[in-house]
Length: 576
Ligand SMILES: Nc1ncnc2c1ncn2[C@@H]1O[C@H](COP(=O)(O)OP(=O)(O)OP(=O)(O)O)[C@@H](O)[C@H]1O
Image (cartoon, rainbow, N blue to C red; front, side, top):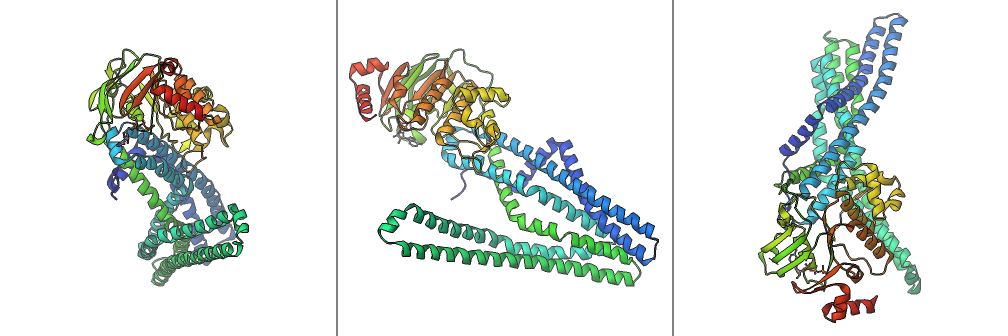
């Protein structure tokens, strides 16, 4: 299947990253300087030891040796401190760029034309905004700082070796092709091996959990032995796969060791020949060998995390691909003169297909709350999406204050749809998507208004708790409360509510109804009523059937009229 949304090429991804670093020139420069300082501090002891070797060979005074020893200790202390600072600065820079990336992705996603999204599939976009951002977040927090430090140290050490004598540098660089060969052997095999291991482990856990959960049935049918045999077989499979993965990794490490051996041997042999020719000192060769030896761990780290960095790079390319998509920005200047919502003679069919709405005319006065009811497939969600400007009518107009909704600033009409998504990141940031400049107090007030403040405060890190993909899991009701809190922060004059169905009569449904009522207060509201209690609480009810409006009036009038709403209400009341 071809990806529905575009993926940026390597050049475009690099250009985006370069531009982001360029925008933070000073911070990037300070981070790079700290990284280089840390790398330099790691290189100094090798140099100093080389000097020490030469001094001892020359029979220097103990005082001269002491000076070198002090330099080594000082460099080690400075190196430790600089490494810590550099790691912190790299993560901080990475986190800031990630925050920007998240904001830019969301801003672009929100302005993508609905027809593009419908064609491309919202799932792909949501997975990019969720899973891909989470993958980059993990890279920034878990291994990128270590990789960048290792890379700087490698480059600086090779330069230092070449500085001692270019032939020593060249000898060390001989190991590079061997490392590359090792990596090319490892990369195509790594992902399938680890995936197979994960699957085998998951199967084993699944069987075990099933056995535990179905214990009474297992006992009742005396299936203990069969179940145990299944678990044992799954365990044996998982063990064998784990062992083969371990053997595979050991072979990879063997290849790394071979490259290390070849490089170190090349440095020592070259050094030996150069010392014999009187072109370098023994100390210089010792320093070069130590520098090369110092690289063993950083290079192994680079190689072992290379595939994860590639994955993060792929996620970045998927996000930069979204950022490059043509967006449909509404004119931010045109605020509507009034707040009444209208669908005028609207006809609409999906993808040019047969109409699912037929000449629908519907008005919601400023500040009025209208409930849209009807059986499944009647066209309620379609009408709501047209009113929100997510879909465009084939015929007729959707307007607020007489202005087409698609020409209004984005903050005029907000929709809370059935697919509420929680973006990966701190909970407070998720809310700031609605109003980036919102203060902590405003965020707390918005949460309090929809009854979510107490559970939000009780999360492990309060409003700073990372939620969404890879973070703290929220219930569907909590995600909807967050969506309502975003409405409060955005403060739009018109709201369209098409929440997912919550079980009627459940405490979740009651909480959500209260939250919705609080979020809608004072606004023009069109509510797709999945529970008829929502309709009963509205100012007016509009009943749809087969894409047309069949009844409209207050709840009491419609019940008294004995038409289709009365029948729906009777059926609902009997069930609940
Ligand atoms: N994305 C789509 N592509 C094609 N047809 C669609 C799409 N979404 C809805 N439809 C069709 O449009 C008609 C109206 O659907 P709509 O979702 O608006 O009804 P609804 O009243 O909101 O139903 P429900 O209560 O089940 O959400 C249905 O026949 C449905 O199959």
